[in-house]
Amino acid sequence: MTVAKSVERHSGVALWRQIADRIRVSIADGEFDETGMLPPAFDLAARFGVNRHTVRAAVAFLAEEGLVETVQGHGTTILGRDKLTLPISKRTRFSAGIGGQAGAVHIRVVASGTHPASNDVIRLLELPEGADCVEIEEVGFAGGRAVSCSQHFFPADRFAAMAEHIEATGSITKAFIACGLPDYLRKSTEISARHADARERDLLKLSPGAIVLEARAINVDPDGKPVQCSRTRFSADRISLKLEV
Amino acid sequence: MTVAKSVERHSGVALWRQIADRIRVSIADGEFDETGMLPPAFDLAARFGVNRHTVRAAVAFLAEEGLVETVQGHGTTILGRDKLTLPISKRTRFSAGIGGQAGAVHIRVVASGTHPASNDVIRLLELPEGADCVEIEEVGFAGGRAVSCSQHFFPADRFAAMAEHIEATGSITKAFIACGLPDYLRKSTEISARHADARERDLLKLSPGAIVLEARAINVDPDGKPVQCSRTRFSADRISLKLEV
DNA sequence: TGTAGTTGTCTAGAATAATAGACAACATCG
DNA sequence: CGATGTTGTCTATTATTCTAGACAACTACA
Image 1 (cartoon, rainbow over the protein chains, first blue to last red):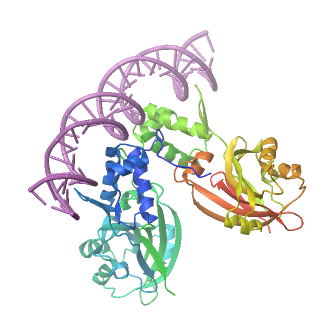
Image 2: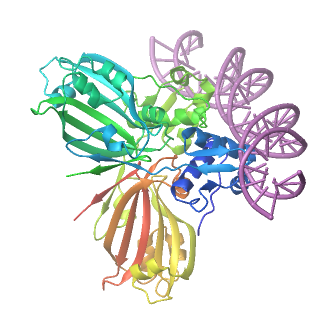
């Protein structure tokens, strides 16, 4: 009763996209671990019952994602995609946590602004009614790949210049130091999992249906006063979280 | 910092499909609850920045799914999509559990056969080594919609004719009676959630990325002897499970 | 009854996706 | 070097998707 499954035509999803998605899960399943390479485009075309050019489009898409690398005359190599592990503890730092597992680590601000804090943010940051907050949306990169996207909220009175400092240093820890806060601690972290929404798929270059780990965190200064609340979504493909007690 | 998100071209996903998916979540979010109807095709086309015909394709797709119903000259009505609740207890019966919440309830056999039981099935059904089992794949309907698909395994010695009886009666309970077993009890149920695979999407008419609830169950006769083990996947959109202790 | 608002259908054309084949460019290995 | 196997690029053709516009068919309401 096993059902051989090929690509579906007229499904509203282009063949190359279906094939790319299936190759991606085959890679994740370790199907090509023996050789570390994808089969030749011609073989893949036969397997999926499509033209070689269609497979080429799929593989090109995966190459753009950074999942594979193809070199002319040689073949298509599967790049190491070991999941990064982000330890979460009292002293969680994105860069330090990921560093050593991946090459360059930095974050890039995609949007920022100052505005009156919402009720949630007022509660989480223990702000007075009507206080302003700095909101920053940022994408985290490790080893050249986007692995996370976050929304951060800081009290506007103490951290008005966070956005500039983050852009300059590529690190929240360093930006805190620049704002006169040399140390901070993780007060709480809540973790959930769900489907990536359109915004996350866009920022993290995920496929439809991809799964994200969402961590909602509050950081406090050494006196226990909240300095940051944030909502970070990690691509579940690329990151696993390790809770340290 | 809100980001207006329109449809993506050249993404490998047809525009009508993207639009259908977004309308589906808008409905789920209650966006059209005031009127109970979709906006006119012309308005939707403007909202998504596409042609009216493209929206029509999306709405036709949703209509085929049974999510909406459009009538000429009037508009497109959103159909009631209250989730059905299936109580799970010692005396779980699909028909009886769903009945009363939805109109016609029945199951349809899509495949069946008798073969030597796998190791898992031998263990679960407590069969002697090398025994045969009857395997049946079936889709459950409620109110005209497919809500579940299942694989069932029965000991072949006692229930050789299950497939015929199920096809004839549309009910497992009745088929058991026809096989001389007037009563049975639920021994165990394990529940998990995951993405629907291609087979499930096909049988249940689900979209890519849809989520299924998977229940693995064992039923026993009044003497405690296993008579059935099964793996049922419910469309998480359409069914919720209620555990009764 | 008639008017406004809506969906259904038809035609046609443009843009995109997929197929097909030929050959060039490159890597590897004997 | 030369043979083989691979990817890259080009052209051409077909199929599908999307756009565009016109008008018919239908509903609802005054």
